[in-house]
Amino acid sequence: MIDLDAFKNINATLGHAIGDSILCEVARRLEKVIKPTDRIARIGGDEFTMLLEDAEAEKVKEVAHAILSRISEPIVINGHKVRLTACCGVTLAPLHALEAVQLIGNAGLALSMAKSMGHGKSFTFVKQLREKAIANQFYNMELHRAVSDGEFMLFYQPQIRMADGSIAGGEALIRWLHPQHGLLSPAAFLPALESGPLATAVGWWVLDEACAQAALWRRSGATDFRIGVNLFAAQLVMNGDLESQVLSTLERHGLPPQALELEVTENIVLDRDDMVLESLRKLRERGVGIALDDFGTGYASLSLLRRCPASRIKIDRSFVQGMLESEGDASVIRAIIHMARSFRMETTAEGVECVQQRRLLEILGCTEGQGFLFGRPVPAPQFADALGIGTRALAHQ
Image (cartoon, rainbow, N blue to C red; front, side, top):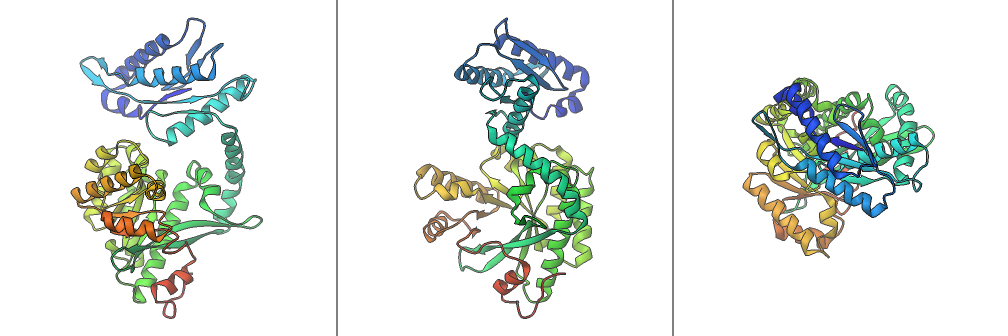
């Protein structure tokens, strides 16, 4: 199953007529990749499905690579030169399923995984994807009750200054106190929440709750402190309401813009249009911090740095965890820190778990760190103790 990346931008900027011509060209290119006995169909707006007969697993990988390579070649239509990328999901019979409906479903799950990895990716189905989909369906049914019954809560993880170990900020992290399963970490339910209809409502609740708590801590003496709040993708497609929603929340709680840092991932920003970047730019001009989360794992990082009004880069934990054994990971971190300085951005390393990692990060010039070495996510009262205001500030109720 093949899906073109960000094809809606083609229709929006060049028009549907040119978009249709590009789809026809893509179809011609796909036909050249397969054998005459294979089958290909367009099953959606910019989605195609191929059925390859008598193909071994390694051969299928070669075809998937050829597909993505052919699609990425420039297309010239009516004087317009267009470059596309696509993602590909693969499933095999009889290894993964025998029935057509199951195979199509498996390919769709593999395609979704490929798209979550960034543009131009391919992924082959594994049974864990089906198990994850079943779990997501379960949580989808439970999430409505969780929202109505107020079962979500926030934990806070410290972000420390490398220079002196003081707390510079705290990231608000959602938890679900499930009536049967107890306290659930985001890994269990976020995939279902992010892809469902409640993402926007829950996202604004997180922002409101975190700002209310940060304002209380600030009034209790933690004035040199910022709160980090993750944004869901759904919150970035609100037709220009992102800026007003954030600013009204800050005003309602009396929290200065400088005390808030919004965290967004590279892929979320790249998959949105220029209106989103403009909203983020306006918020940055008002003083709100913008952090690029999980940096280094997404797509077209250099291009994004040039366009996105970010004030901070959060280096992905995968590089931090491998930096002591891998010179490659250490070099990536060094390059990210250098780029951040060039763009006048601060850096925070995620997933710092040992003193040796901290020392090397300090040597490389990283300004802040976050991870179990400095503190695990904890409820608001314990975090207030870490801030040194536990006796003066209760948790926000």
